[in-house]
Image (tube, rainbow, N blue to C red; front, side):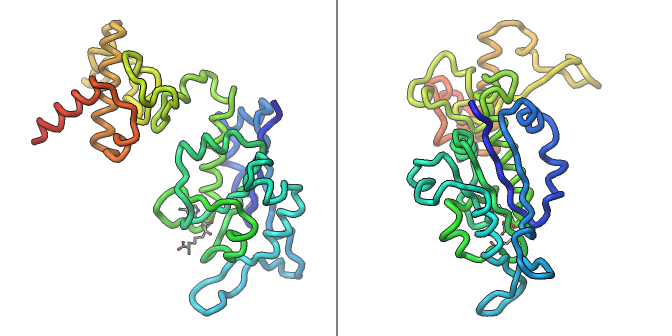
Length: 272
Ligand code: SAH
């Protein structure tokens, strides 16, 4: 399999020196699973001042990233034609980071991980000339409901989330299947005894390591029991509790067994 290509377009190329050079993200690149290139948008300007922004038509605050450098930068990269990308004939996607984008989730991350190439365009200032969203990018993605001052951190978040899903990037493949948010397509609908494999759309269960007792704080008894069924049940129940408490919205999409539903009903009853 050839390496997945990630191209980041930014006015702050040095920004990425840190974030992409650690841990799994670094290892995936060293193993040749992924290849990240950072492109300096200012290299695609034509004036002496290397201007990337301009005042908004219609007036108002701030500056807007100009379209020409972004279009020219993309054209220099040999990206597949937009029609082919949109039709799925080319496994490439041009993503504009934007607070107005669709929410980036684990599901979107898994979709992107199947592609040959992802191009991430980082906005700045008040945002990017809308013609970039309409005619150059294939989609707008937001990493959450808050406003950052640039797309760089968002791009780093996406690259990190996607790269750990590339086959071979994480030592133990099963571990990325068991994590928070992951719904195993096979598990949904058909549930059962083995609900310990895969969080099935719930948040992950709590993890502990040695020492078994630390400053009077003990590791839960069930985990020390060596009884697999007891451990499975304990983990599942904690995952259910935490999801109900912190992210009840996830329960709707989760694959729940009869046992799970009974447990949740019990908690809800106790809460009154
Ligand atoms: N005026 C815009 C915010 C611009 S912030 C608005 O109100 O929607 C400047 C840039 O930061 C954006 O162009 C985008 O690239 C990036 N950005 C800000 N928040 C983001 C988010 N939640 N997700 C992804 N990118 C974001």
